[in-house]
Length: 451
Image 1 (tube, helix red, strand yellow):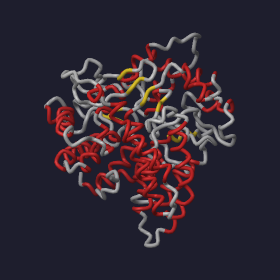
Image 2 (cartoon, rainbow, N blue to C red):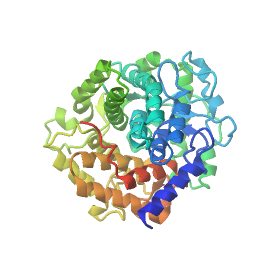
Image 3 (tube, one colour):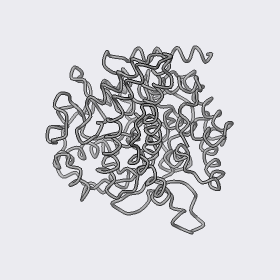
Image 4 (cartoon, rainbow, N blue to C red):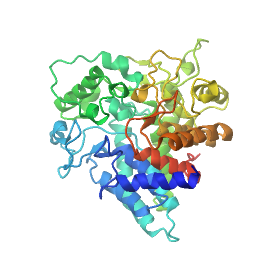
């Protein structure tokens, strides 16, 4: 299939998933609006439908909490095929929650400022009137969201984000969370039906286990007991992790927030620059054990940091590689990280695809079919691709891009793919896969993180 045909097919996925208010991630699994999905989707629509890309993000931010949090799900009341639904979250326990629409009580990585910049840059109107007006409307909301992440979710002042639930990471069932979840004891029986099992046709090996899913739901129950008061939750909540991918995205998003401020002639950017400076100061301190440990056995990879245990979570997952997206990698460390990226891909001979698996295939916690425990996801590959371009590693970036194009050519726009065989898994007609493939094909380099 030629790239123009792939692009058109991807565009049709986004058109088909539009429900009049927002774009659902997949018609087979996800009937509501997911936060970072919508940002990726807006990037795709920025190439073909500026107005729809704007509407996508404005509908999402209309559900923003007054403390700045953008919820990870905005619910469509007409859909009853997803659990947990809006009524389960009971967000009215919080004085910050919206009262006009149902949402979840947690957040997701802040891709949105990046998507907003794409919308402006790809607006074909010579005056860019709609996109410029949009940036002026959305800027204060974006800044409020980032401020929430840099305060409520970072009382340490590190410039890095603490997540309180695996779902906030976007990498829901990653093995990174296993130990922390194992320390959480469910104190009462949970009664609910897993509708995701029905949605995947009973293919339970592709989704989180029942025991893990029970923990996910129980943690929402705990959040409700705290009435979503994050200051109190931060004191003794059993799951608190400085998350690499989340923090990497926020660092890049803050850079784009500065660029948006320049476009709309907003001069007050000192606070944003301070957030960026904090992250630059502490990124290695929190995520890079080698920096703190002279032990020669350290492998030079980045790892999430568990605040409860006060230790790194040494699991070799895609999060160990995504920091290349930030541009914060020291030049002397780059060759080592490039070797890991090469090993992770088909160049090692372990996988059929050049795109990167979500877990190192040599690790015992790698699972070929299961969600974030092994399969290839396009969004994390896209970030690493852009990071490689930022460092001038064109050949390595192109291998990942070609790997992704091969996957969608052979298997369609799936939620994720078997790293060994390339088989499509999870949701079909998956919107962020389609959207990011559109960006890869257009190759505008808009997404290469600013210096």
